[in-house]
Image (cartoon, rainbow, N blue to C red):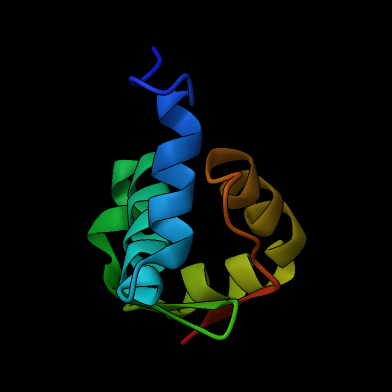
Length: 96
């Protein structure tokens, strides 16, 4: 789909996203949606909160064994999330 002057809609949306004053909130929402989409329901039920700060995603879990398991497999979690949200980069995931 193209708009009137020939610029693809995808490029227009990317420009809007990068120039928006709410860029941080858009990025945080993208990562929160990715967490819910990638993880099974049993994990999302044990997730109390997600928030994003300086390319780091913080996940608050209410299960210590689950938190420990995610700590051990942090690289796999980052790869799954990065595959889902390719428009932003993620440096680290912190399980709280």
